[in-house]
Amino acid sequence: MPNWIAACSLGEIAPEDVMRFDHGGRSFAIYRSPDDEYYATDGLCTHERVHLADGLVMDHVIECPKHNGRFDYRTGEAKGAPACVNLKVHAVKIEAGKVMIDVG
Amino acid sequence: MDNAPPAPHDYSLTGPSSRYALEHGLANAEWYRAPIPRARMKELMKRSDGPAIRDTIIWIAAFLVTGGLAFHFWPTAWSIPFFLAYGVLYGSSSDSRWHECGHGTAFRTAWMNDVVYNIACFMIMREPTVWRWSHARHHTDTIIVGRDPEVAVMRPTVVLRVILMFLGVPQVWGAIKSMVRHAMGRLSPDEADYIPEMERAKVYRTARIWLAIHLAIIAVSIYAGTILPMLFVGPLPTMYGAWLHIVTGLTQHAGLPENVLDHRLNCRTVYMNPVMRFLYWNMNYHIEHHMFPMVPYHRLPELHEAMKPYCPPPYPSTFAAYAEIIPAIIRQIREPGWSIARPIPREYPAQAVPAE
Ligand code: FES
Image (cartoon, rainbow over all chains, first blue to last red; front, side, top):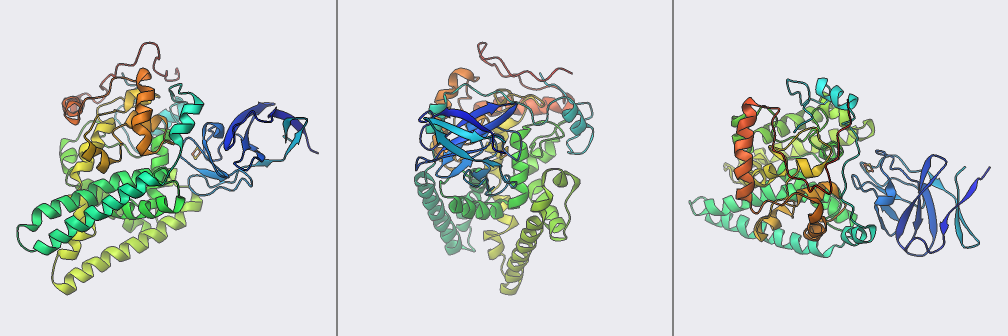
């Protein structure tokens, strides 16, 4: 059962960037890709509990600020040590100028 | 100055100091971060291939020139200065290449980082998977006793060990023991603490390949009846060229406090000349690197400018750093709990260690 929540407004995130969004005691990372698509993942790195929103978006990869572990934020795929466990991804839709993510 | 671990100092990752760190909030802790605006950080973190490609071309050319001349003049004494220069490239500049490419920040293109990482690892005899994980731990728990596997000068200081480090002796001896252990499919208890299960097969495979290469070099030398191949590749150049990376490397943390949660207290930023900075890939900006490891080496001077208001004054030279380090590590022979206190700007106080 999806549970859609408005995370931010369209345009609030710069292209090829990421924003932190906290909801219900959980943290999420919302991405805007260079081709202007929006994506969402869990907000904390799977290696250690570090907020990915402090990291760097390059193309479709988020690099963790702590040890530079990399994930494909479209699929959550971990791209190599020390990021070895995939990230959970969340569905995204745009509605009335808002970026909605499924936190269910 | 230290939140000193229980005496005696125990640097193993599975002993009482490790338990102390875990119980006292020193492991996986929140560290101080200078409040640099996100927009500026984004600029500084930006990757490009250009600077590292340029530097790598110069690096390879320097290897060819020094190695070629050493070979040309062999076996006369004229080959010695060229071997010394080649050794510094092989046994010292590989330290920074290993380091920067391990972080994945030197090049924008991932495979370029991986290629240079693996070559530099072989030169400095740091097994790629093992050191990737040990270095991740070093960044999580920098100079936390019982957690950080990369403490260069342990306390109380063993002066002979420090001297031998300049000749690469403890490093290479440790590297050979590790390589053989891994080739036999075993990890030490410390390694098992920071290398996850899923990565271990890779450790054993690489160690076997490396061991085969080292044995092949020895075999070629014996077959050809000359030590020459061993002077170019393997433990010998790692050792005779080690001194410079110890000169630069000891400035990073030696003499500074253990068990603190603020890189301004346990790292040094030291101004160095452009040649040293080329060989060391700007790791003299060490507070900056530890606080923001995502910033590539070629942007560290700019990060340094941005962080200046929040940091202690940088050391004006390597000599100035050593004027502090040498007396400090000598004092730590008898007073292992003592360390140098760095002046933190009053407006940006040091990150507190959690109360007991
Ligand atoms: S915390 Fe993200 S890679 Fe280590």
